[in-house]
Image (cartoon, rainbow, N blue to C red; front, side, top):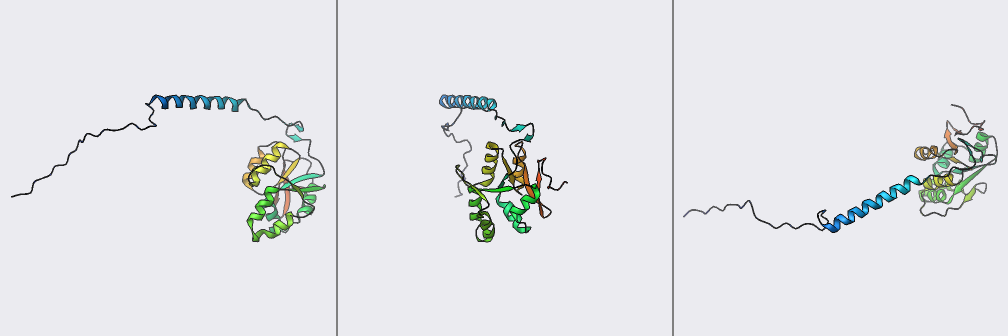
Length: 200
């Protein structure tokens, strides 16, 4: 007596259920239409919003900038100054040939504290009494967003940074000069009255 061969069934009739998120259901179609309408309304609102130009601007020239200069200092600018053995207060005065007030926001201080023991000298330098402390009212401690937001609100600052991404963002804001470390001294861009700054 031989073994009986079992044949596999190929076309087994199974009932398929439509998923709850299927587009053929009328409720889902209605929600999609509502979402598309909301997106279109928000697009219209975004297009109509135009940032108000500050009154201190004369084309690209910022009339609000003048001695004593308020310089917003970024975290990496302090670190680069220490690496290049530059005394921040004196080097700023040499670059701008005028009195400078270095300003440190709460976010920059928080970033320096987060960096830990390795950057304790930078933190001690930022706590110098000659540095003006600016309080932050926003949430989070990301210094780049904080500095950009502050520059958009008040065009009376020079921003000192060595961060390429932050520089790129600041160049989009007209009338905000950028100070950075170049060949062991401070240089400044987008500032016509900076006589002490080296020309490239």
